Length: 388
Image (cartoon, rainbow, N blue to C red; front, side, top):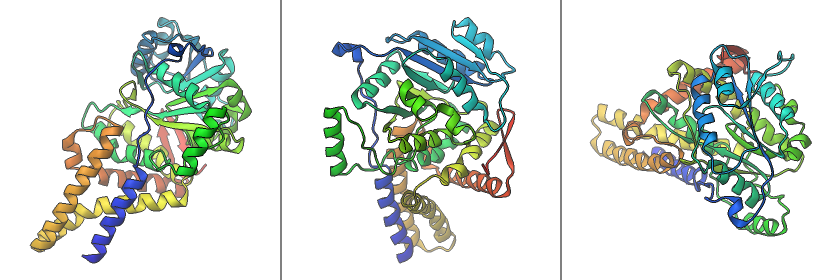
């Protein structure tokens, strides 16, 4: 019991470090301050995204901020993606044949980036949703921070299957250092550099960007070599963050809200399994050891509470079972604290979180096995090898 108790304490400590803060986008529009914003080009890589694309293009039509151009890169779709883009009067680019060594999304983004004429480039995944003030909030963040902006969108959950993403979303946030505390020295440095418009500070454990929403100036995009520099990276958003660090170009990460959200894997369980399998093992290889240790203690403690509760109930060890029931309740409260900032996960799914955790662990092991064995995962009807 002492060992289990120690694990619980370490797990809770790890949780409060990993999810200490939830940095959100500020409301506002740069024009409210009398500032002129650069021309904005929005680039949407899309492969068989007829459902999502129609919704996103509708959101973009309703923005309160002007958009210079919307570019949709049709990445070999076999559905109505191209027709929907044309109907919405977006600029449609039909992707050229993918060169050897390129992955599909990176190739689509590169073509969109080359065709764009704006001075600011906003790369959006087709499943992103934006309120009428969403673009304004992104531009405000760019103006206030003077650096590349990336957002982990708020996850809108619409059915029980999509709730299986709970622990994936938590790890997606925690492993990238988005919620880690900011030290006093770094706060002072960021305040100083913000006043001087010299933005060289960043959190040392933030390893990369979030692919669904990336706002970058054309100059910074060209400085890192665009998507050409990460053409074969499975986790292209993490790889792009690494390239930015190499060039000493700072970036700022934010949590999305109802103004910047997404609905992931609306296609059902099969799509969800394929999508998360693609990202898990590849992402771990990029995560700093310190953060991996924190995630390990967090996952172990979250899993230990229900495991030892059941074990003690079966063994009729009532005192120990009562202690584990209390620990389980604490984790339900802690997961609720985290989840309400990440997505619209129901209280029921959090109370009965063990099946969701088990699903996460199985998919992680599946991804790891495919990476070790060099086996491909199917995504968007294409084979992707995780050993890259």
